[in-house]
Image 1: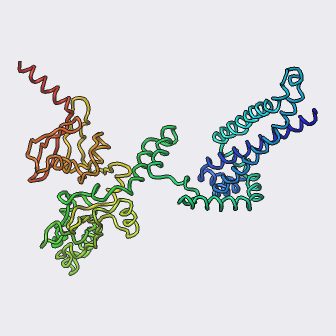
Image 2: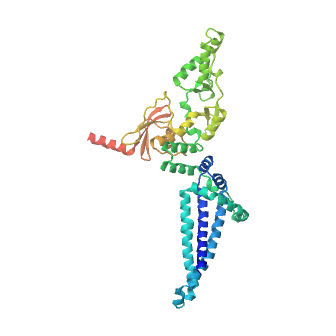
Length: 462
């Protein structure tokens, strides 16, 4: 009797340990990251390559784990119930309590179910899964070799199970997909990055850069381009001497060149500052020679380069790839009618990743923040994405406009007059400067600040 019980107890504990092995194997192999596995391989850790092979076959690993756990669970019930039944039936309780023998088997099943379930859940599931999540790398390395051996032995049966499962899925109109859960959407990637920042793994500026990089696939060129009225450009019939003066004043390294017969909106090329300086140096080194005379008469249309033209609906990620492939740094943006809408440079795209990039020639007066009793006077051409990032003002992004001026005209449904204002989402927007039909500057103030100043002025008047 004692030998029977001890043997059964040993088998039960062995089966619980086997269940713990499968549970730990599943959670550790699913949790360990691809990048960390590669680091383990490069550091020469034993078993790292086996972990990599299993991680690339997670669908087979999960199927194998389910098979192993199912076999263990059924075997636990098959071994545990007879042992407990035999103990109960041979106990003093059955012989001393009237009619207890009639219910002995039912009592044995209840006791066996409770004890085995407790061992199975605590030691076979909760503890190994928790440890696997906390120490995914160590446990994955430990279980990789035996898990691969188990998968090799059971591969024919697993193949049959996978095919059978796929057949059932097709009967319900579903597809048998593998590793689907390992692919993250852009929004999920943002959440992962944010979580890493919250736990101190990366600084805040890196989180913002990664978020901006993910959004490059959704931001259109029209959202960040320099609009046509703000383009610094030169006519193609301008002489090199006159162009040099204008370029030095404008402090640009690449300048759009337009057809003087058709106007500034018809850009036909781009002038590189370094090309202009090369010709100037060539003229200086050949003073008094025919070469210098020819250079003096040259126009920038003769040394300009072809310009890249892109639609305003192109997204930044595609344009950045095209810039890299074609070795360009500037592109002309055209609208659906083929007219010039603006220009965009590599720097404009980089600023979407890292924020404004200013050199020693940039002069940008500090703009007041929208807090306390202060108001902000902002450029009408300010992009609504920058308005949100720099001032915390959220405007609709899918309403057909890209700038603060566009938002004002969309709200008023007309070109505003100087001094005209309206209220939106707790702020008052006032047009404080116009350039023809163009909104040049807008004053934004919190409504409570406006009301407070009006009340103060009223009290002072009284």
